[in-house]
Image (tube, rainbow, N blue to C red; front, side):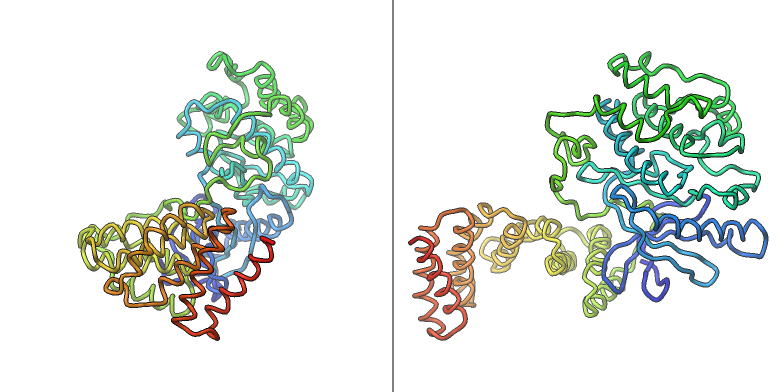
Length: 500
């Protein structure tokens, strides 16, 4: 976590990546207490009044405005833009998942139906982008995220340009915008670009998914661009015979040297891919790009709330754990739970390395981390921490049942009523033991939760029996007018009417 705050609102955390235009950071929106991504224009490029710096400023401002114009679920959402001194920043949605380059590396060879699904989704995005009209100019796997539900999000329209004469002047810097491995011949020559330029890059991306490599590689950028201009790609079916002929035909159409020989639009490419899209089967994992076609609009299979490990510079060997804990406590006092939870989670490995897994310091830190995650509604992240803590305490220690009780509440919130009910049942005898639990109201609350879970599981008879016994005991403990037995009485009355 850094001390730097942009616009009195966005606190920079860690570097996600950097390139020619600047850096991308994870950050925290202090006003809404949420993670965001922030793109900063590199200070060394902005400094000074030279024409290069001025052009970069204009290009970045254009990125902010143009990106915000396009409304499509496959594009990253723009939240805000502004400047901080001489630096310009763009605040965007933080996207969970893995970028397509990493996804390809983890699934080699890449299943060809996955490749079709990826390119079909990208066609949908490009159709929206080209309609503005905008040319992305730098479509490549690192600029595409695969989300846990299999949908794709295209990042970085930072080199996109509105297709007008002003944009053409912007590119006259002596160096083309884009990545040589994915660059269309006309782009490499510094000529006019259009939607057909993005379609060529889409073809390079598809070739890479199917073969594992880009069609044209080399030791220098000029050598790569020369091959784009003059060499035909090796037919992909020579490398992978199982690729359908129709898919190879679409690929070769996209990689035509002459823009006039390529498909007329991203929509045309999509229509050619429709017969190859999967129409049956089961997604094979949480990052399966066929999922949107096999199960349209289905909820995420396992909502991932832990962000991927950021690509950060090497951290100090001995982080200041007490200072980080103090910072987290300050954030908790300010109600900034998400940021506090991430700080606590980030320092846990260092605390374990320094003090040992079962040290009191680590145990206290883990308890605070789990409690913060629960308060922030991040139950899936809190659950394993609570279970690990509960297992660390010796048999008979009253802290273990309380941690298991919190874990059962997480199970409730995650929609696992049977597992939560089983946990409460095993805890109830422990809480009814006064020595282990000095709070006489806790067993009643456990029984109330059990009754509601029995209702959610459709066992109305068991729920009625649990509530009737609970009402008797709650009135004895609190008195008939207390809010707790009053609530139980209302639920029991409703259930009696429903059962008829």
